[in-house]
Length: 458
Image (tube, rainbow, N blue to C red; front, side):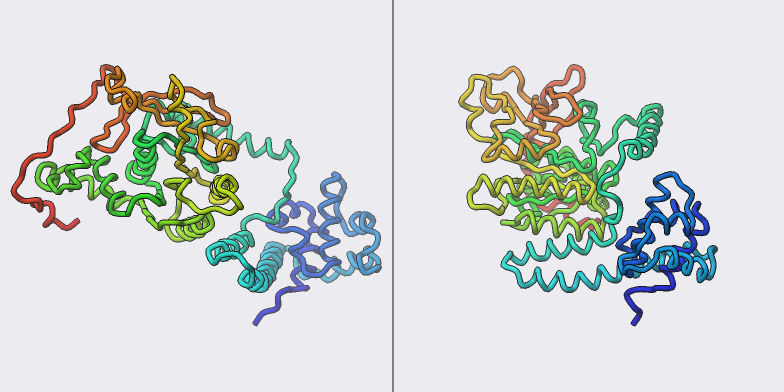
């Protein structure tokens, strides 16, 4: 069993920095003062960084003069001189830094055991405890040693590379910074679904909000080769697969449900099934899940399979923390936003709307129609409302057309994108010039529901 510290490595690292200051920038990337076990070594490291930041020459004299007296009251000059004298090899500085870093992680893991015991003995529910322990474990080696406050000029240096990447993508015709939604006009409006975004998709019942969000997941997994995970608290995994196949194969969902698709759409069914099977599209249908459980499952999923997009259907069916439902909804939306930041992916969260919009002459929704909590509007980076006029008006001139209303967008303009709603196929498509609604296919009468496809293994 190795020790949780290595005094020789700490001295060797500090000695190398004092003798070869040009190594400081490289060796300090993954280290903080807390990476050192001994307080006097932490103080010397802070002194080295402070002298370096002041633009002064770094050696054992300048650093000792900056520190003067160590925490134990001894002379910093004598200690720095001893470190330099006993440094075995400056050439091994990288190895010393790795050892110091590893021992710091070992100590954090050791402390995690105590923290886990404290959490386990708490009053929270089991899933919340698991999520808390997972979060503590994942935070150990995720760059937590970097400064929480940075100078704007330092950020600008890194941002220049981002600007260059955006320019290169624009020149090459790759205008999207995030995942494509599968709808050209919506992509142009949003710039894609961006990492760390919380995207709210909201609408009244039967408007198509689940269809829209599922379309995002299908397009990401099947056509972009990304990993997409859909949490549904309303539908089973079988229902989700039916919808994905219908959308991908442009097969009437009713035909899939009653079995006639096996004969009437045999080739489309086989092709769509293969596409879904080889994709990284995942489903979970755990009823009554809370945001803590979803966070736990999403973290675990990302470690196992990767994760580029998370869809949660829908907010009002989730359990939350708080004394009343408004507080619970607020905790869920806040948790979803933190999850998007933590995993570095877009999180699409579906939400119901209140009946307030139906009491207005213009029934198109606005952010204040979000049901049960204004915190949803506050936490969201993007809010998309799905509106179809034909739901309210049988004789609407916009049959088969949906309005995707951008009710809120950070760094983007609000507005409306029109898309074709193909309800029979459970999908949205971009509107093309001269587009007309498709006639609904009538299911064919067949003697057998099995068809040849049912015998094919894929």
